[in-house]
Length: 506
Image (cartoon, rainbow, N blue to C red; front, side, top):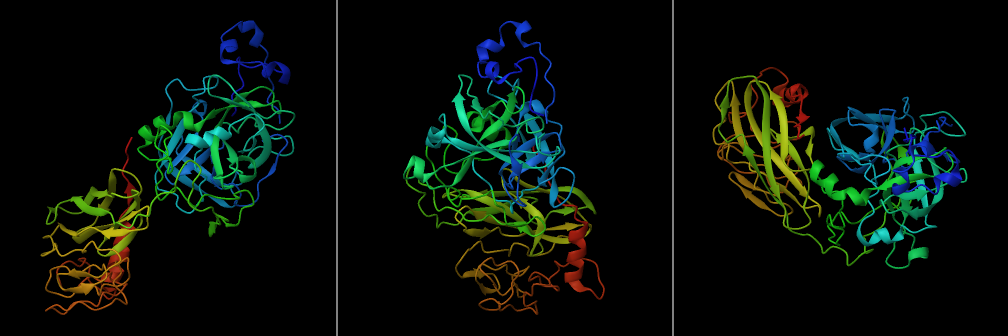
């Protein structure tokens, strides 16, 4: 809930006079017990509206600021195992996502401007449009009178708790503790909105060029007096160095941690109107219209046309284990000299593993593997959309490792690459260099179908169909289960059994 404690007065008039120094004054002046009143003066959000605003287990509100990071308030605590996307805390359209860990800022809380906390998600959420954090020169819009939007799941004066609502109001002041005092006259956040966002639009009509009418998020609902009288909000940019250091994730695609303009490819495509919603939670919420490359604080990022580099660093090629192997950690090294790495996708036996995506360093995947012979690969995508593939490594679990497993992907992106057994456009070649591998199919080159030329090897290999992921079933690297289903069915069964989870990095 929004913090209501001995730090606040009951009336709007007295609340507006409270400051960090006053809070440390006469304790008798703050002894009034405040009732829990029934966002105030607001309306219910449309389906998929403000989709990056989430419920923190029904207790507080938070904001998805990166596919892997949700920011909320320290006074809400840090023992949360999940967050919920949707318009209600009690089910209905939406979904629940597990957290990997949550952390609160040491000694952070209401009244000191550092009511900071975040959760790292167990899996990245890539289909929800994200409003980026206000940063650098953009913070110049935080002036008295600037129009903002508060969103939350808390108490309201026009309906029950637990429904996502929005209210448009204005900034009143920024105090010496780095808190924004916002709202009043019946427009406000309330209990249950704690940790939730305050959004601001970079209006070209108000701020002129290069403002582009896209949205930013800056506020973290912290504390206040009687609901409807206005409240105080910590500001995300004040804690960005702590957020990034503790999460291990770059949360500011246009700036460095000090607010200097340093745009990457992610500094573009920000929402122009996230309020109306669109699409559905069942099929993916529609991002609506998006802006171009941001130029708010400087020139846009130069194009990134150089692909990243990527390699499997553990396990080693040829490694053998007693089977089955539980908690096998696959470690991947990925680097990019341009805009940076967007994500790394795990590939097993030529198939991209569902859920096997990591968006931050270290790129690690913890899997449980049954007995068999396995090829591990990885696909790295940078923020410019360039793709590269790691050379595959082969391991054996309960049996010898596949021979010649060093003939993995050629690491090329949108050009023809030469594999040990043939030529393809970035496709995965065979398993031993003698049998035929994939035919170098699509630019992504993982499924090996409909490529620019079948590889010509001396063996009688597969044509790289999508069913088997281009794996040669006679090359000694297929799975060990036999039967009418063939390797495609075997691989599907194995992937169901993998129990793939993101490795904990707390």
